Image (tube, rainbow, N blue to C red; front, side, top):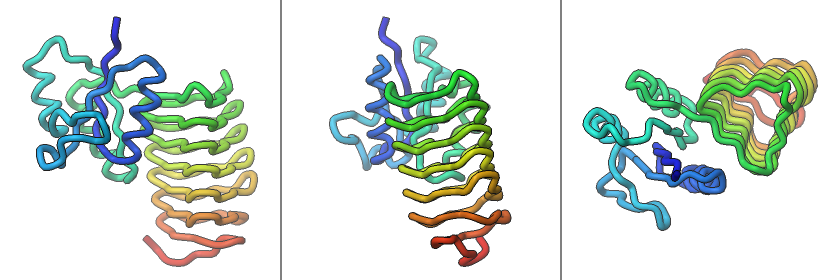
Length: 212
């Protein structure tokens, strides 16, 4: 039996999530708030807006409840996931077949783990996170809800990344470091000291650039 999956968010990020979903046996249907001015993403048609998906669920009992939010912006992704949860959708977790996930790791609903990523023993990943291509989340790390760990990021053991924080592509974070909530770590940074909440930091070693 074909598994149906609604994807909310039709962007480049959505393309990669659709590719993962199809490799896992799903047939995907896109929904995006730019519809109807935006009708396609690559070869996939867009079927309506997020509000339209919710309305459809209330009138179509055969519609699958499974949905994933493919929006890179952490705050918007949070809002969409919470809205869909309030309307009784099943926010699923997707893991690319080439990702390596320890059986001792814990990954919450709505998270997507991309190709080549590694999540090691006793790491915890919260709701609605993005663990992007070839990212490494080492043992005992804690990734809070709606964070984005970008491609080729390496988090050493025991690192904590706060709610809605973004760790930019190619960054490295030393063991036992804490990055607070709503932080932005610039691409290619090396984080060797704790970063407080609501901070943008960049560099090697990373230094505070501004408050968010």
